[in-house]
Length: 115
Length: 113
Image 1 (tube, helix red, strand yellow):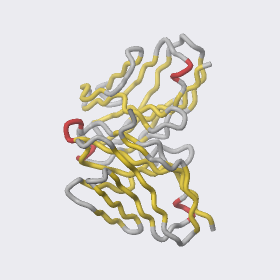
Image 2: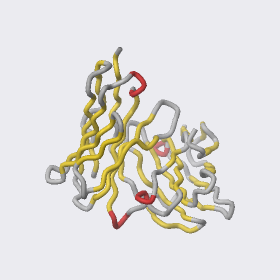
Image 3: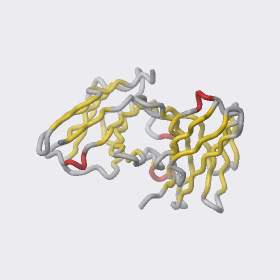
Image 4: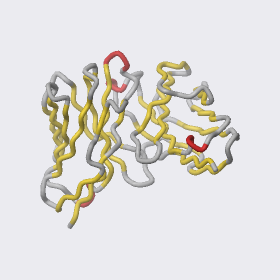
């Protein structure tokens, strides 16, 4: 158990819909990262927050948005869903701002299926 | 553009032998490399890392080798154990984007008894 909690674990929805994925980081971790893993692909970095502020952005679509709340949990919002958005979405957390200040701890992921 | 590549989708090794997983990268700005291990229905877990100022880092049965001129790194597991059966991801970061890890596609390692 990494200490990172993601909900829901599985989600099935239709094209055009909007979903919210939630992540609670490990106790004491200030950074939250979101990654997307499509079928047979590596993890693609989406976005990072540190103590409530956006710190780094990857190839995140405009239809996607995220935020980190004062209690440090984070939400990833995916809207106008398309079939290609079906993927495993991982949240990770770390103590510091960068991967060199400590390893990333990943949650079990949220599997999104868009029909 | 796949900046980090793991060209072997799968690898099968006999228990007790050495497992060698390979990873190639194209971005010369990468200067920090990590290996993560993933079991089914779990998130990736950190295994071992190496900075570009080194060419080898060892932690128990796991050793990572870095060849900067070839832009190649490898993970050696010796001796291999059944519990090592998992998907292994190679990842890299550049100092300018220290928050962002670029992952390879993963290699599924199966250790046969």
